Image (cartoon, rainbow, N blue to C red; front, side, top):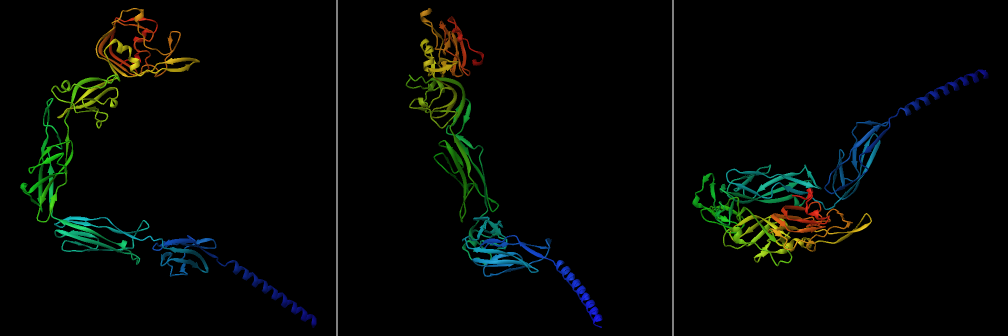
Length: 521
């Protein structure tokens, strides 16, 4: 019997162990199949200004996979910041923790609200309004700007102080009603902010409908009236004006005229403008009503000094040995007059002529166009400013000295050589013939660059670099040696318009009289 009992007990214990194992397996399966959620916010820390809104976004994952679900938002300090669907609205300075939660999972963002003193500002599209009677209107656009961004949740209201003069609708459209002045006030309401910067007022001017049309046949007149070399110049012009008030034409006798500068030009009651001095002046038409004076847009008149291009050329000499250089006024203008001003076309602001002569230190050599003025008008002529006008044999022989010749020593191929560079603008004033006897004692040769034996050694820009203009004259009767007449010619030197006759050459370098092709002009 005991054996049978033990046998039954063993069977029962085995069954219990089997049920226990199955139950454990089921619990493990249930725990293994349980879902795991996680919440992540777009920021864990955020700082907002007192009136600055912000926004947080939350993302949820289920077992590591994204899940599109709605989270629950909460702020632990609604006295500092509130949250609605992730949108943050500051209430006061301080800190608050904003959380998003879902199915037991959550994430938090520390939000700090600070007051930096920045305030919203109301901005208007117009600073003042000018309207005319008869239904003229302008719309004033308004917006609230905060931290350089336009706030779209602001409410804008418009009011006009005197609705007999103008009226305004809810969209800011201001319409003229009667002559006068009033004020448009624009106010903005935004997030309960109290600020003087959310209200602005601008003036509104309503005028009569006066329209001008001012014209003139020309916009340029001159300080001189008359004929210069068959060219006509006038110092007057007559303005014309058509004006209306409320669509009705204004009589000409009711229109007056004004000049902005009567020292430059005057205008009479009939619109006749008369030049007084060089410059620009604005001419306006005027009309006076019982309410006010109306003025047209300005018409600009330019007053010029008459200048005529003249085919004429003169030469002046700025040789440092001369005290001054001057022009013959009667030869230039063909009448008895005086020269008051000379300007170079390169800079017409500088007067090169004072007290009857050129200001020597303002002149530069070369051929240039200058404007020569007498008291009434001017001529544009070609002026050749020469380093020296060569008129004698001595002048020719002194060219290197007049051209500022330098003596420069350089070592070339191990040999020390001497170079004589010079420049200048030289012209012949007449034919020049040597007056000395032609023999070896009276031969002439310009200084030539250092040489090995009788062979010249030239280096770029180490010879004559200027211009020699013979003006069609002839040089004759010279016996030349070594350096010839000019010494060494550098690239860029110009020798032109000159003839050489009865020239004797003495020495291997005398052929410098001949001009290399690259130097000819």
